[in-house]
View 1 (cartoon, rainbow, N blue to C red):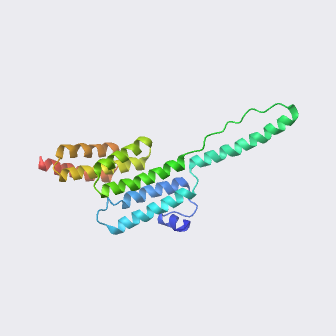
View 2 (spheres, rainbow, N blue to C red):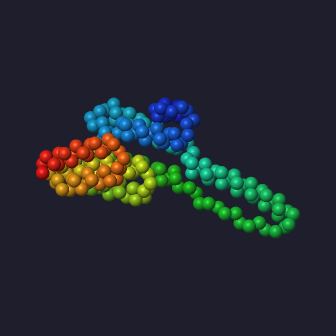
View 3 (cartoon, rainbow, N blue to C red):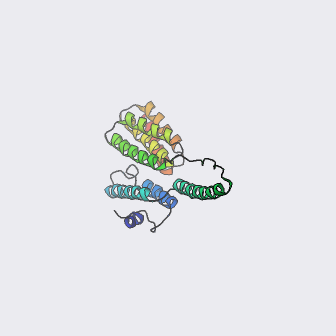
Length: 204
């Protein structure tokens, strides 16, 4: 898949910014997510294609953090040139430049997507306790990541529904509530869980 195809899949022009790519991916991933379109193979294929395109662009586009590091390096280089000129005149040793540690944003993103792939395997194999433990650990590592919160809420919802099927109704109610609390502004999730609560009320 070349970069042009990746941009087209995300509905963007070539050269779109990192922020535009991320925003477009979030919108499309939520629209075509298999949990929101159960049994729809076209939606599933679209979700996979969009995710692959996003991963490719993620590896090629500079993130805002990387741009910040680049700017720092340019500034540091300019400062070193000035210090060398000053040293030739005054013969005083320059102060040691402060060096920032390498940014780990790219490593975090790779970890995030590997965890997501493992989460999907656990859910498909109905290994719900492992799935919940995995996504909660990722959420603790990336507490401000909206996508991770969405995955966590979906995992809670799927397990809640499985518990309803197993007639573990009180436990199911707990996990459905946790799903709403984790991603409270997701209207689609809210509507689906309200239907689950109605099923619970009928059983009780």
